[in-house]
Length: 250
Picture 1 (cartoon, rainbow, N blue to C red):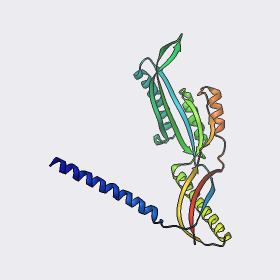
Picture 2 (cartoon, one colour; picture 1 turned 90 degrees about the horizontal axis):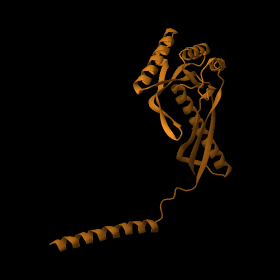
Picture 3 (cartoon, rainbow, N blue to C red; picture 1 turned 30 degrees about the horizontal axis):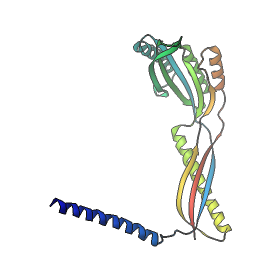
Picture 4 (cartoon, helix red, strand yellow; picture 1 turned 90 degrees about the vertical axis):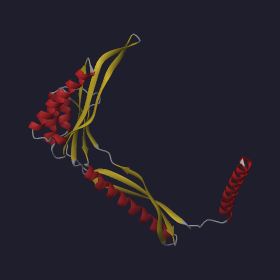
C-alpha cells in the first residue's frame, strides 16, 4: 500500500515537471505579441514658488544627575517659553515638537569612559506666516531669554502649497514629455499613439535656509544674527520635476 502511494506521488511530480517544461517550451516557440515601435521621452518642468511660512527651529538642552532631573528641567524651560509666546499672541498649535530625547552623557578620561550625568534635548519649531518678520524676531528673543538655542531658520512651503506646486510641476513635466514625443513622431513621419507607461523620476523641493547656528551657540551675537536674518523678504525659488513617458508610434 505504501509503495503504491509512493509510486503515485512520483507520477504526479513527473507530470507537473513535464507540464512546466512544456509550457516554457511553447512560450519560446510561439512569439509574444509585439507592441511595435515606441518613443521614450523625458519631460522637465520648473515651477516658481513663493514660500508662505517662516519657521524658527530651536533646542532646549538641559543636564541633570538623573534622567528625571534633566527631563524636568527641560520641561520647565519649555513651559516658560510657551507661556511667554502665548502671552505675545502665539497659538499653542504654532509651537511643535520635532523630538524629545533623554540619554546618559559620557566622555573619555585617561582611556576610561566617565559618566557626565544625563542630558535632555528638546527640538522644537515655531511656524509663522512668511510675512511675519517681526513675530519671528520675537520668537528668537523669547527663546534666547530662557537660554534656548536657535538651530536654524527657514522659509518653507506649507503642506497645502507643497501639494499644489508638486501637482503643477508634475503636470507640466508630463506635458513636456508628450510634446517632445509628438515632435519626434512628426519629425520621423509618424503619428504618436497611445501612452504605454509613465513614471516620475524626480521631484525636488528644499526649504530656503535663512540662518544656521552651526555649533549651537547661544548669546547676544547669535540672537542678533538670527534676528537680522529674518528681516530678509522671501523671493521666488525653483521647484523642479522630471517625468519619463513611453508612447506607441502609429
